[in-house]
Image (cartoon, rainbow, N blue to C red; front, side, top):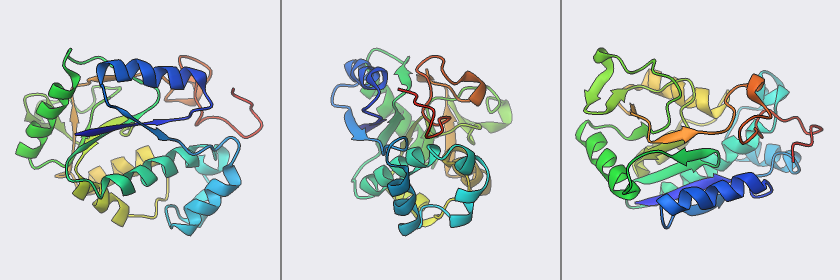
Length: 226
């Protein structure tokens, strides 16, 4: 299994967090994040050229008010293009998560993959921040529940085939977390959430900006977060 962390390298705290997580996951690969703070115009042009987002979505809602989010989405999608060509399942992490699973991290992730394949699941969220899905009717494995919570892409496992399938569903019309959730609602047999093995250290909501590892996604270009 290959593992990637999408890292905004101009943030020292996030680069250091990559090193911290790598101690638990030797061989974890750094995947450079697009820079929405300094290269936003180029990121917007690339997103439109590749049909990763609908043009109208850049002029309304969160991607308009907080356009730095677009760089996060593009980073995920570019990585999915890489994973689509892989031969086995892959791990994707954002740069504000920490490992809280067993001492043998890769073994535990491999066991989760086996459990997911046994349930015909192709995408597993590993860092749920709420217990909304953990109800008996959603349970499909020992520590596996069908569906995704509101924020579903801070840490996940997926198959190459599912990476290709997600890319086939483009363009997006909303932020990537909500887009993943919409896909899970429409195609519930593909997505599941595991009991958390990663903890999100960054801010998930605008009211938390500036706390923990801070947040890039809630930044406006003029904010000067770093």
